[in-house]
Length: 104
Image (cartoon, rainbow, N blue to C red; front, side):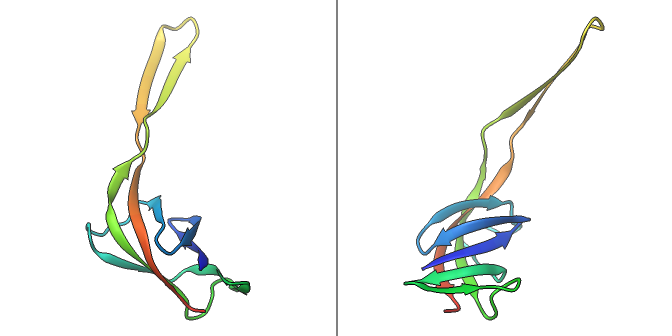
């Protein structure tokens, strides 16, 4: 079973048992979380497309923990002005494991 969910302004393709990094969620580790914004479900050739979401569909997930992405370096410079600035950023994500897809 395959589903497309929306969370944090982004869309993710998920399957049962898959592990996905999504935008940071304000929940604790080991807690179950339900995503109700399901845009698409496919199961053995049967397809349901939402307008904009699939009615009665949900995706259950278990929160594994929060992780940080690789460091992104930003370097600013102005010629002939002796101005240099280096900034680093690490985006935080929540790692989830999909446990159940319902709605088909």
